[in-house]
Image 1 (tube, rainbow, N blue to C red):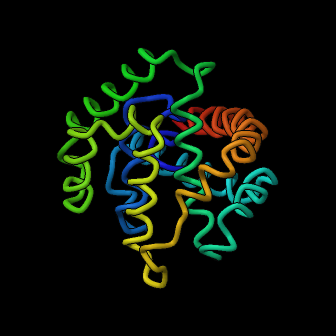
Image 2 (cartoon, helix red, strand yellow; image 1 turned 90 degrees about the horizontal axis):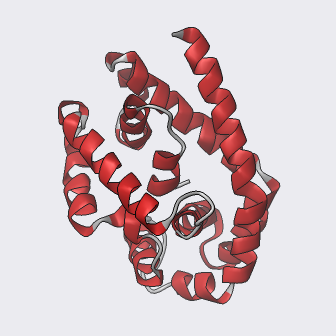
Length: 197
């Protein structure tokens, strides 16, 4: 899952911070944060593990695998944020806007915990309102170009956005089959985390 899905699947402000930190910190550093941020890091990992094993995600990867092979999962993650952002059963448009503003506020309030490499990206994320704007094709295209630019062994001209647009119906079905299961899984992980507190 990508940034919007991870931020949606949280239950406390601290978990929001931890969900974003997970990809930007070393494993041994996770214990240096307050417990609720650690819970977000744990939740992020549980979400990723569940996602990687879900049959609908395996189907979704088939859309991108012929083009990017082992990187297919990264493009599925970006694609899923598009469907989350457009899922009006989860939030109204105003609800998604409010969610995005809350996430930016929480991250700013916890700025001291953000590593420098995340701070640089977060500045752009907030200014360009990535979370709310994942609902648009061109913004998903921008995110996919970022993945291509960061990948060591991928040509930046690979038409991954075309694959997304041409297979949107298939990917939507994969999302529909997958995301309710992920929500329930995240709730279960959170319940276990709360028992530890």
